[in-house]
Image 1 (spheres, rainbow, N blue to C red):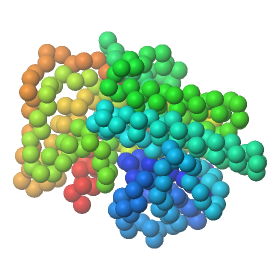
Image 2: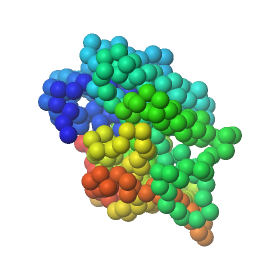
Image 3: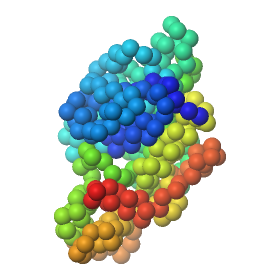
Image 4: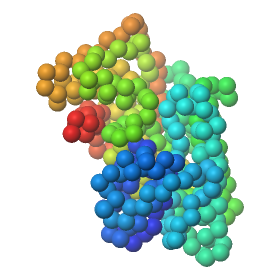
Length: 331
């Protein structure tokens, strides 16, 4: 598959996945990429030095309010716009729900319009999340794309994010069924990697502390393991999905536990500390805990067999991915 000569819209382009996707697609010949974000200064900062490569267009706009106007028809839409930081989800829930629901509908309406009025089959990927599977389990388990009967309670702190992601998937399937538009659903596990505009999460807090030479203090060593995936592997999975996937279906873009990526936050902290001690002269970062747990809470692995069947695989171990991330921040 090639994106040569195609016009591509990426919403939420300044986020971790959006940024890496933009930079990957710039390698294609005569490919026009419209990077959409609500803050033009942030766009210019994130993509400083890239505007001369290929046809990168930075556009200010909020897809939750209206679909962007552009002179060319979009052949592909990657809808990545959605805050993920816990403090935003808790304190500004409407700002989380709107891009996941209204933004998704606006993009799908564009696909519907282009198909009905011009006969064009544009393709769209809706970015979903591991949170559609809920965070509660009594034992370590593995979930496939069909196993979505368990969900967060509606009053859970994360519900504005997880439930709007679930609804975005329902909306995408509805448009695929009723209007036969080419929409795919990508369910990402927990992404990590270099981000110039890093969200306020524990992973990036640990990275920043390590860069400052500070120790990493965690509440407990008993946190549940989770399915983590390095951003380059996620982008590879995303492009494989668009090329070989079936419209209207969901695909887990996850490690599946491969290459030691099924890891708890304390294990990730240890990987970050080890990478810092290896790459930063004089660094002696340690990981400590406020309390020690006798056991570890159970966690959930996202089965990635469906995506693997399309020819994709995980290439980066947790240690490799964390090491690459830290080196990118040091450079």
